[in-house]
Length: 470
Ligand code: NAD
Image (tube, rainbow, N blue to C red; front, side, top):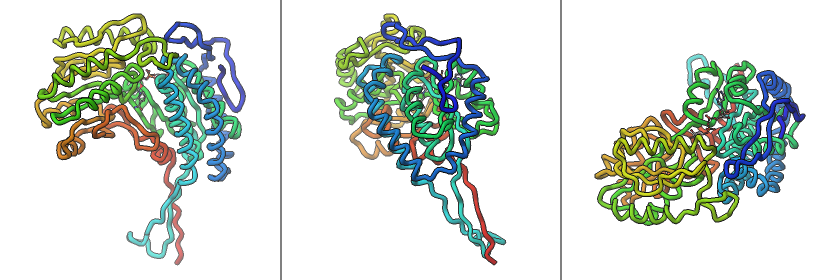
């Protein structure tokens, strides 16, 4: 596939082969762009600002609806492409595409709801006799930088609210899985004037960095790892910035939890896309009084998961994104043994595959739960009571989402009230998101919120207009 700059496809001599993590076959290739290509894409986005500014909100909404209809027609083929480039089980890629279509629809709706407000200047000294109101105006050009794991939906979460708020966009997808995102951009480009959406492909450290430092970029919207996010924030200067970063989300299972439901939540939450999900369950905080019953069923259901060809609709666990990623997970698990964890299930690597793995005897200070282990690993930390559970949850540098299982409403609300995370779900695992909700973590998990309405808010700035009527 090619880059898209000012409505035209751009190639380069140097290309990057996108590899299918399941069978190591080349899926397709993309150009390796350089800083010059990024500058061209930014120039194109700058030139297109006027065309979008002059377009009515009604027209933008209509065009986003059209793009949504066209995306819907390609839903299945794009799901297949996601599976080929990421190794994500096809049932989960189909799920991502269904959500992507909905995200685009939310943006088409939101394009018509960008309101300012009237401001009573006469409440302040000297403000008597004024009529004043605010407008939400576009920022200009948004740089959208996305990771490999949800290549289409995470790109839509940036592109669609940007355009709904009349900003033009330069998208830099992950080099590991750029293909479906590039096709998405083409679908959107078909509806809008040239230059409204541009794409660049290449190495993050070069073309990603150019997007971050370039003075014609007005906002950087980044989803990815904490390390890259921190680096970007040190490079972005005065630009507006949204960082959707990693997590090590807890699943609290309190003494009066419904064990069967909690086990299902732990299995889904830990092993969806082999745990390569920012809001995956990364720590199971389990009350000692029900630990044995929970663990017995958890092992049984984990061992029932089907590992294999991600293109097979029955597959639950596919490969990790590459062998290095699988080796990193293996190393974290092996290191944890030295600190005293006990292996209850899994633990083996075969190439890019890593078995769903349950670890017991985990303590809050161990690296396996302090860092984000981006793989199918469920470390269990046993606790006695709600107070200890909350204290362990909050003993973390991250704060993306959290899930609590209990039938006791007081304990549920106490936990929800005290847990430091962007979202807390009661009787649901953290691995849950609808695309209209405010999404974004506390602490090292990020800055700012996505979720279409909230992203639109972040993609605008407020201007006050006041008229002296006296
Ligand atoms: P990554 O940080 O390695 O890469 C993300 C993107 O940043 C890629 O497009 C990459 O090319 C680019 N990049 C790399 N260096 C850059 C630089 N110096 N300047 C600008 N851009 C640069 O992340 P990844 O491995 O692709 O994705 C996994 C991570 O993403 C995990 O930590 C996961 O938790 C996180 N994630 C977070 C969310 C969320 O919404 N909070 C969602 C999905 C994934």
